[in-house]
Length: 81
Image 1 (cartoon, rainbow, N blue to C red):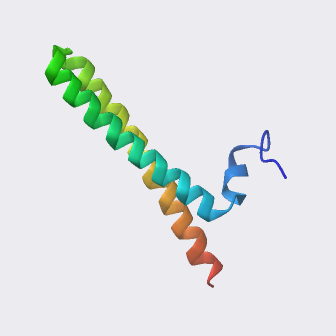
Image 2 (cartoon, rainbow, N blue to C red):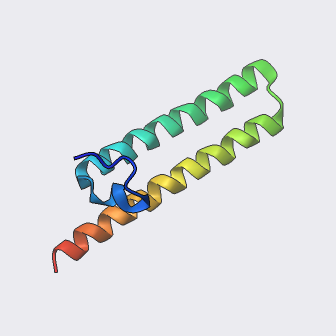
């Protein structure tokens, strides 16, 4: 069954393990990208404003992952009741 076009809560019905895997991949990619941008920024001389923007984007992505993982935790906690 596809969750495409079923609204904002469609992802909540997905397998929690798949959602946790997605969040884990997002966290890994975010940190690797953040480290690469900071390393390249120092080596090449990217303006500080752009590196700071990359930091903000990374924090936003990590915030999304945190909210997703909290949602998974709450779903599993509520299923145990």
